[in-house]
Length: 311
Image (cartoon, rainbow, N blue to C red):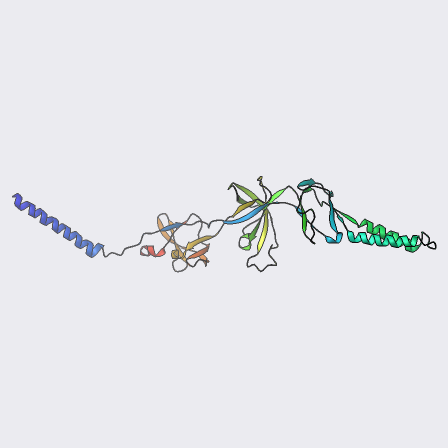
């Protein structure tokens, strides 16, 4: 065939093929409904709540100035020293009683100088007994209620009920205040993950006590808080802080995953099946909290509308 005829024929044939392809795409394929990509989410619990706890002694006792005994005249121990049970710590001296003693001694002296009053006179005996009783209360020694370490806060406190010392046992635990929204998920013997607020070192500790009475019972707080104690296997200093991880059992999913306000589409064996769930509204308008019907590890469609064409 003449090449001058063949080339135009091939060109014409190519144009016809391209035109037909464009026509088919324009009028058939392009008009097919477009479906958004199917996005899925893997079910998991919410992130754990972080609560701040503190390294504290298992037992402690605070001493406050009791002005009815007078003022603190003598300390028998030094600051940050070990003491044993019933050991004298400090001593009060009462100047008011001192004046009473002096006054009664003057009265006794006047009676004694009178020749007509014998030494066994009732008035003399009563004054002597009163003076003896007052002298017993002139000095008051305060002793340790248990063995421990004493920390002196003020050697010479002057205000009534002012703190003057603290006695604590060198046995420690971790204490934290837990809001009522989490306290029901905790139990004695449960293990919690603990992280040092200073070094990020982590350990696990066991809950040893959960208080039944709220620490803020008499306040106007909206949420009650309960104190818990945990073991302490660290060498942390007294007062050092820790971060406690409270494990969450809450599952939250987007509202877009709902169908007919009661189903989700669960991926199972490369298929999507309906699953009935129970839920409640969460604080976030776009999310819901699942009460039942889903477990961690399961996969659901994030946007149920994206798979309507498969139903």
